[in-house]
Amino acid sequence: MSTDDGPEVAEPILTARQRRAPILLPVDPSDEELARDWTLSEADVAEALRCRGDANRRRFAIQLCIVRKHGRFLSEYAAVPTRVINRCAEE
Image (cartoon, rainbow, N blue to C red; front, side, top):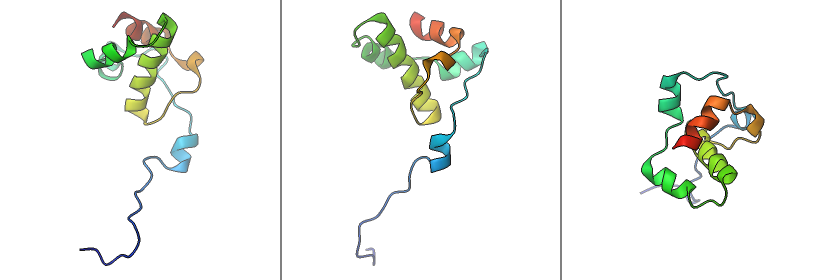
């Protein structure tokens, strides 16, 4: 039993510095990087298909992969390499 009187406070997942740092995506990801970081499971694809419109489905898939790798959302889609967009669109 804990001797603390107050509730336990969880540590933040990302530090303030990590939250402010830009997400750096590879300009020309290798096939290995695409397979490791930009592959969706069947459940991921099913969830993305619930989004209306191809553009929304692609953005959802990209955000899902980015959140898994970086722990936060991407704010600038212009930074997403073409190979990554094509990879997410084909799944």
